[in-house]
Image (cartoon, rainbow, N blue to C red; front, side):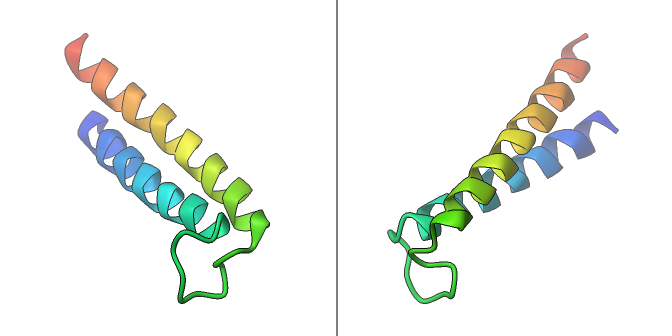
Length: 62
């Protein structure tokens, strides 16, 4: 279960990071490019991903 949390968290960080870059206009070719709302959505998704990844990694050490 902890490994799954870490993997899902890592994926969410990557997806959230992509959405942040699209929202800021650094990655083009999508309806999300340059739309500021995707910056905020991506930031939230990445933050949840960091939380899940930390919980997954911390649980394996303890």
